Image (cartoon, rainbow, N blue to C red; front, side, top):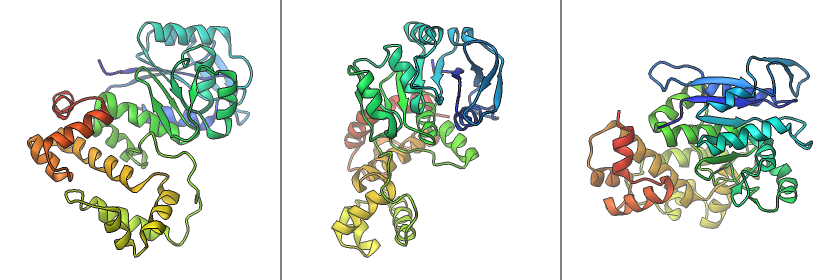
Length: 313
């Protein structure tokens, strides 16, 4: 069953950004899954935050014993050994089948619990090397926004936590639910986990507006065959310059971006229309239902038909 109850563990020095993020993302919304959210810590009471303010936490570790999804939030004391009770609580949650996820340096707690051993994981790029040094059995990837290993997920720093959680909502509850939450929060509804954490041009430059127009142009033509030459031509750039500018602006490649956009459109059509799989494939630019099925299953872990049966409104 898709998760509904969430327990987020707040360590000492928990970041205010992560508290606001998970609280807002899982807040009640009409017509969306009835999430129940609990903020917990080693014991109920006041927990210091990274800004020096205290946040009142009403639940202890017992909240993690009954939640479907257990989150490790980041704190500014992540270099210190975590509380033994928290380590045991995450181990127990994983053993009973809960989904376990971390945001930013919350991955250090999952690493201390041994839950990342033998798995690929990520954290904030600045602290990835230390995580790899402490836990050599973990395949640490510092370049991605989030990593989905099934029942264990890890996200990169700061706002990438939103990408991780929206991905999880999309995976468990469908694209319509994730899109509605993102629309309410005024954030992008979907970014692929493999997208780079660090975009080489974080400050908008003169070419960014041109790139945004190219992306909008491409989104309106997903039913057609689009090549890098087509995109570069519309941007009035050489192919080499366009690829370099595209990666600097988006953190990913044109081909990876197109695949992600086509599959996101396919999800929407599968959920909201009765179009045949063949017609869905045509409308998102694939030559046949077989090609869509191959791409969809490889990246979503489920066939288009099964996705429709699971998430059709």
